[in-house]
Image (tube, rainbow, N blue to C red):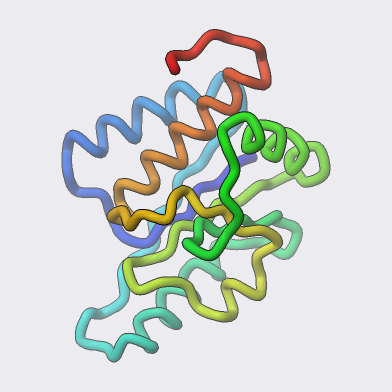
Length: 152
């Protein structure tokens, strides 16, 4: 099982359609679940928002899950390395959880719970767009793993 934990709800109909398309493409390869947790109250101070969202994400993670944060301070991998990494993670773990935090970042408790971190780019992207990028890379990984053609 692969889970994608995300802060916030994607309300843009075009982004939702793209997300659903990648979810559908991944399903023949592996079971996938996208879980959205509510954004914290914007009237909270920044540290309280990070902790609140972190707690909501941690509540969705089981003790046996292998957790990978999508984090600016993580390791960058190309698509081939990422596909091998996914294959390895899933050989050794029944559930692989990718976590996309909110716009203010991740809590320290969430960082401590994770086993790995991935940086998609040194550029900054909206966290709602990042979920599409992660789903696309998961799909691309399965195409690579299965020696199937996919556009470059």
